[in-house]
Length: 118
Image 1 (tube, rainbow, N blue to C red):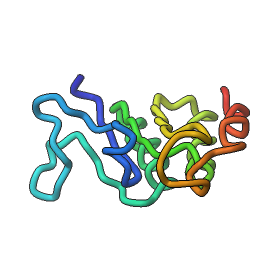
Image 2: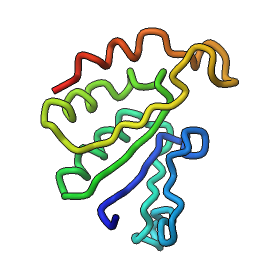
Image 3: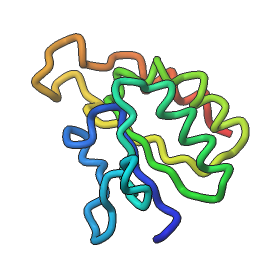
Image 4: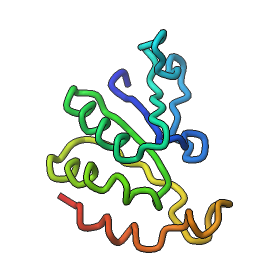
């Protein structure tokens, strides 16, 4: 799938969202053919950049923990309103999952995202 790109808000390994087929290297200044994007700890920018990428006919996937979806809410909302083919990948979606403790356990995030259905 030459149109598939994957990115993460600094959690590629934890969310298991990296592409691992042949030729799916990290996008770097010296390797612009890479298909894995590393956004750093920037959930809003990850979703917003994915929205922009989808407008250029690629299919972006970006990921983070569900608890951090609040930071990306405006970009997720625009993605839903514009019916963009962006895949928002949220992992660690339970209060009993993960080793990071209560600060990384979502409580109301899933219910708050339901209103973004087009």
